[in-house]
View 1 (cartoon, helix red, strand yellow):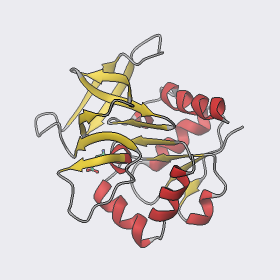
View 2 (cartoon, helix red, strand yellow):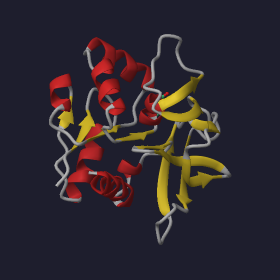
View 3 (tube, helix red, strand yellow):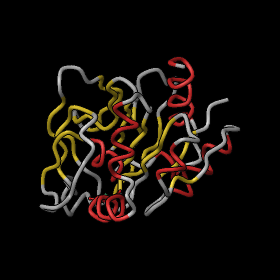
View 4 (cartoon, helix red, strand yellow):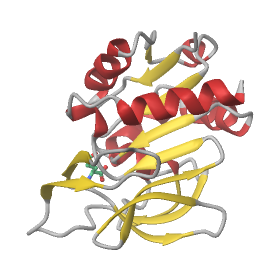
Amino acid sequence: MVIVGVLALQGAFAAHQDRLHELGIDAPAVRTAGHLGDVDALVMPGGESTTMSHLLRTNDLFDPIEDAIRDGLPVLGTCAGMIMCANEVLDGRRDQRSFGVIDISVRRNGYGRQLASFEADLDVEGFAADFHAVFIRAPIVERVGSGVEILACYDGVPVLVRQGSCTVASFHPELTPDGRLHAMFVESIESQS
Ligand code: GLN
């Protein structure tokens, strides 16, 4: 059985742990570089990417995570976690860093004030029924590289994409009881290991 660590410096990490536990998956908190050695994959939760970037660096976790991902650690990034994974971050803070492990450009808070938070039913590749998605000050995907698979769109804009072992969503799959997206991630890890 795979062990899926959840980055737990800031943000909505506990709900990710709940969803994974409901699937019978061990989901320890990752707060130090040492914890990385115990996990087969990593979830980067929603929250605030500027704060997350800052805490990753002050906790000496940024470089170890970057190295682990480059060595093949599968990652699921949601909302702020999507921003942390993206190659290019628009409207970021100047000192904000991202891991650059998926070839997309995202704009922070890109859905604007009217749509700052909203919910939508998404047609997700491989799911028999729609997935109810909660968007909270979500990043908008403005560019998707040719090597990136688009798994769901909202209003014609990609909101769930994957490149290799990095899957990112601009919404919060952990905030609804539907565990299918976490199950999809776990299955992708198992099929690679
Ligand atoms: N707007 C936040 C950021 O820039 C992301 C919001 C979220 O994760 N719900 O990091």
